[in-house]
Length: 102
Image (cartoon, rainbow, N blue to C red; front, top):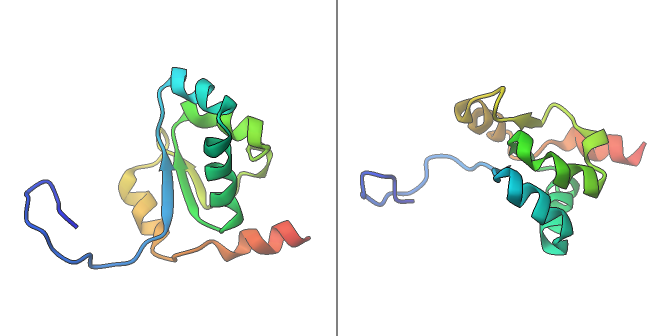
């Protein structure tokens, strides 16, 4: 990993999450893009932690995920990146798998 200071070093921790940060225009455009839809659907299916901006909501709507929001998904307008990274330390949100099977 190379932080902004330019010194390369090994990552201290493993985290597993995705952040979907898009402009309003791209949030709409990605609704028509199958790989973008798959990216979001796969993140949910693989129990990843997901941070997003409100402008990503149309992508969540088109994939059907908007109705499945859980405590491992957070909007960055309401939470800090630090909170998200802390959440990601659990590696996966296994409770989501349980809820999908019910």
